[in-house]
Length: 430
Image 1 (cartoon, rainbow, N blue to C red):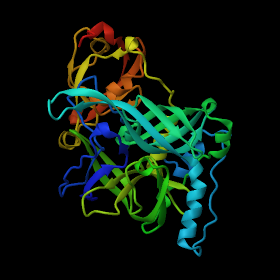
Image 2: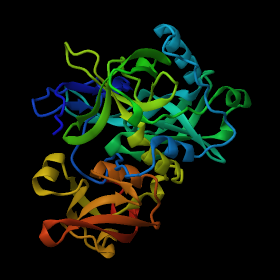
Image 3: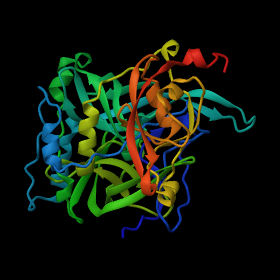
Image 4: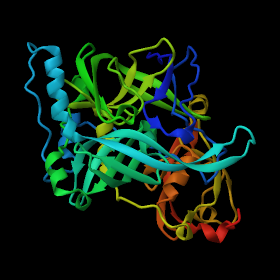
């Protein structure tokens, strides 16, 4: 039976001044706890958000899935000719220089609620956070970049910067918060020709081939200073940690542990083997005083099936307030503790369904657990609200719900729902 590591963990993203810095949580002997930097979770309502999902099992190897990712005219990154006889630092230098054209810096401008410590009142403030992304695909119109979900969460404006420091606007194509993964899309027409010639699509390796003790290289936008390189070894495989953001907990399983330094801003960056292949997406580090050399990455064998699915989603833009969608429920997150205690699936427990709302008309009832919204996994009301920002009232979507059946087991089914206009149900003064 695997043990959860105990340590204090922080997300490897650089958060602007509005976030109030990084809050860390004391862990206990039962498991590691990671708190998203500066994150806060408020009472459940349709006005909060964070998008989650779950990975799909696949019999294909990571390299087979990587080969199936959308591709176009942009060349693959070079791979170093590294042998075991080469000097260690020489090998790291070659791996880093070959991988750099496939790395981007990501800037997330967002508006969040901030509490005034003197008056106790809350107000909205715009802040900036930074992370990293890995170029992993291309379709006819877009460059597709993989990063962490917490790097792009709650974004109002996203910008990516390439190896030549050219900055371009980007959109979130899809997210999977339960695995802390996201895909960001950049319109190819927005990227200057000179930049297109310089960037590369990352080579992806199979993390199932990784061995403990193997040398690795981590690259990321540490502290928003630009791409920096660290090196170390694979310290352990199949590590489990728990991310805590306010009252919300998410379990991450089967991570790669490394002693290569993963610092704030490295989130979404690449963990590379000495063949220059991406074997993991950097995500978190241990942050307790006295704890060093404990960073975590999402292995490609787990990430790639999710990434492939996210890359095939339709890129959406946030809708105008006048077109905002409405469902008509209140709900609560099914926490990991409740899941284990009652055998419930991760999702949103419907606590109440409003009368004469889209939810009631579609047949949603109290006690159902919403697990997916339009084929995207959700685990909290904030997840659902985040997704609703990209849908207009009047659109038809599929809601996947779980209900308890014979023997107490939960069974999923799909319900078709026509979204309502929020303005028809909620007063503008509320």
